[in-house]
Length: 75
Image: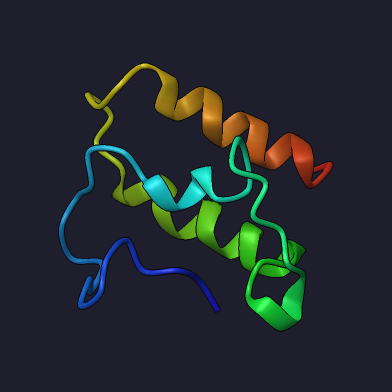
């Protein structure tokens, strides 16, 4: 269970910045597992997009990944 970057995204192309990881922080969209934003979904989003995010993308991208993992107690 993860959030696609956009409708129809199949994971075969790199993304400049994984906007999906911003749902947890700073947007705090955290409705729990029943609404698709529990800890397992957040973990899946982070793990799914880490290898699909352009390493030359915006500088804040990797700090947002770090915040995401920290919010899960996984760093």
